[in-house]
Amino acid sequence: MATTPTDRRTMLARRLRVDIDTAAFPASQYQRLMGVQELKPVDELRTESDEAYEDDGAARESVTGYNWRLEVKILHSTNAAGTALDPVHAFLQAKYHAAKNGVANGEFGVRWYDRNGVGDAREGRAYVKQWSPDGGNGGAQDTVSVVIQGQGPLDAQVVNPAADLTPAVTGLAPAGGPTAGGNLVNVYGTHFTDATAVDFGATDAEDYVVVSDSHIVATAPAGVAGTVQVSVTTPDGTSPNVDADNYTYA
Image 1: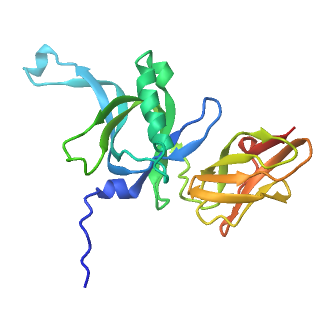
Image 2: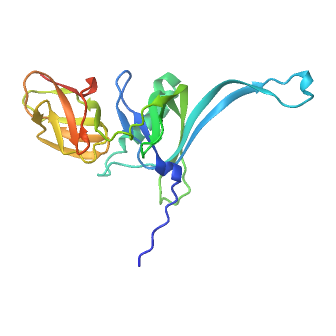
Image 3: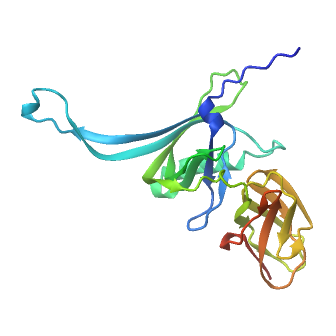
């Protein structure tokens, strides 16, 4: 009987998913951070000494605020063809370098949530404070330790994306094309794994490939000049109409 190989990923890394918003504000295009090997969310109070003479030398602190961050170890990955870095990994590395010229240049949205749909999601703005290739693995694994440092408040009132398995479209790239069709369109969102249809308005896409749970590449059909909704259908339903799914024929 075959034995089961050891898997040293932490249970927290298994249970929580991390999504990175790769779009430029105010647009939103969350994509899942793949290859997470270790994950440690940190939410801690910021304090300062508040000790007085009458405390007789005993420490006393007052809370002046809080800070938060994600400490993540990822398996630095390429695409399936091995011709380019995983796009989210490449995005984070680029944002790390951008922050060297000012933190505002490196900011992006991040959220994490229980993959089983329980509890609230956490969401906020952040930047990559640390990008450290680990080395020392004899080339067997290319791991990188990443610190995603929060900027401003951490929102705990976000709906868990895994609580409802209805697909949702959060962005298109490009968001328009010729009326003759044939344009390759990246459709971003959530819950795409079991997609049974991708439609441009009332017309089926010429073809589509489910790249991941958050990414589909579809071939736009021919259409008339104007704007249509791009929708994704799975056994759990059809994505609702939002501004982010508008595709313009011209």
